[in-house]
Amino acid sequence: MASAYNPIYTDVPEKDVFALHFLQTLSNLRTQNSFSSPDNKTSDRVKKIKKAAYVSMARAAGGTNRLWSRSLLHQAAKRNNKNVRFLRRKRRVTWLMRRRSNRGDPIEDVAAERLRNLVPGGGGMETSKLMEETAHYIKCLSMQVKVMQCLVDGLSPK
Amino acid sequence: MAMHFEQPSCSSPMLNWPLMNPNLSQYSPPQDCFTWEKSTEQQQKQSIFDSALSSLVSSPTPSNSNFSGGVGGGDGFVIRELIGKLGNVGNSSATPMSSPPPMMNRTTPLTEFSGDPGFAERAARFSCFGSRSFNGRTNSSLPVNNSKIINSGKLTRVASTPALNSLVSPMVPAGEFSRKRKSMTKGKSKETPLPTASPAPSFSKTAEEKGGKRRREDEEKEDNTKGPEPPKDYIHVRARRGQATDSHSLAERVRREKIGERMKLLEDLVPGCNKVTGKALMLDEIINYVQSLQRQVEFLSMKLSSVNDTRLDFNVDALVSKDVMIPSSSNRLHEAGLQAESLSHHSYNNNSQLHTNVSSSNMMLQSPVNSLETSTLASSFTHLPTLTQFTDSISQYQMFSQEDLQSIVGMGVAHNPNHESQNMKIEL
Image (cartoon, rainbow over all chains, first blue to last red; front, side, top):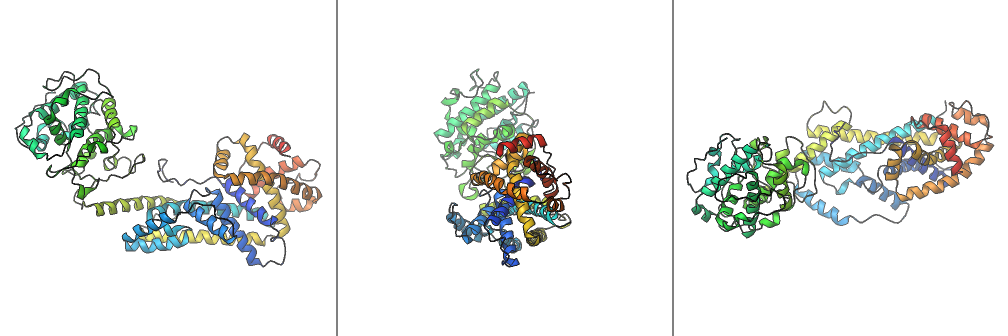
């Protein structure tokens, strides 16, 4: 893949870190008791699991060091009404937005907008930073998918 | 090697430099200085130095008037220091101003040349190879620019320029370049490695001290595009030949290059991107890939949720307890991998969670395990044929840890059961 010398750091931890986080999150879910009660709709459970997957991925991939993980955790925390622990980055965001308006490559801007909608936390980033985050996000997503796949394979009835 | 200077006493000695040294690369005067680094031949150095000094000496004083205050006192000092270092190279130089101190080294500013302000000016002019004209240069903030040179690894090539860069940059018309250097008129020939050089350590050390915080990115562009990245304020880009050189377009180009580089990175990640070329299509591919990954996550989470509950809950517990053990056990087992990652990537929250999980899931685990029938376990983990007795919870864990992890998360974790049992005993 990328050469050894890469100033853009996009290393992700190994699979087991992801696995660990995911399982921890799942067990947390379970202990919350909303899981085991059968009157839950399936979709709710699915959503919970999905959220657990993303949150655990964000944590595993570097906590608040990465922009996308940071915003993911932020969103999740907000939904849970937890306190926001992160540093406010508002000022930087506005500065970047102002700067971004000067740029103009129409072709890439359109695609960049779509990407921003996809990658969490992409709204306040410059295009180059966005692409870094996307690269890291892709790596983490694929790792998470692998973990989940293994889990499903292991747990599904033979 | 005799360097002769057919140096007419013209008013722009700098422009004549290319004519003067046919043996060296066709670059200009500063290149002579720069080439000093590379050379290991004393003689060459000496000759170069001789030639440099003589040209400096011989350049006429009337040209000083061109410097409308472009070189302040600080500049002169800088230049003198540089020249002093150069002087150190060729000890046998016969130029009038050289009686260079025998100590070649790094930290001694040269005072010999202090008596010749004209020389300093000429040297400054001489060093401004990048700029086309010296008119209207009034920048006297030269000392400010002497921030340190960063990369020792790059010193051989960078160091040649930064000290003089710092001389050059003020010369550059501020409005146009705003710290971006203009390309040489000869285009990219700067990238050619300088054939001869002064002793690298002394010269580069000089530059290091002086500080050239600047780095000529483009010079190294051929070798490593984004070079070693010492923290610096600006990225210095050289305008390429035949391209617009105003700051906006330069910035634009820098940005585009950054994006291009990251696109390459993404290309490696996204499978099947090789056939697609062009930014727009690539971006579309990337977006599709991200969307597909996200859909996969959703689909898998649906599947997970549909796994029957008891099994999931129980298994999650079991696995979590094992996994919780794993970091601690793997501390002994995998020195580098997991430990580093888990420790580095876990926030302290996670660690505390880990600890609480250990205790809670241990307790939770023991009861279900002990009361569980072997059949359910066996059905869920078909790889555990030996799981028939629950006498020893530790051996139970042993089974789980080895096989669970291998089967479920597909990890080829080669746990040594003995170690694990030890650790689990401790944990329990």
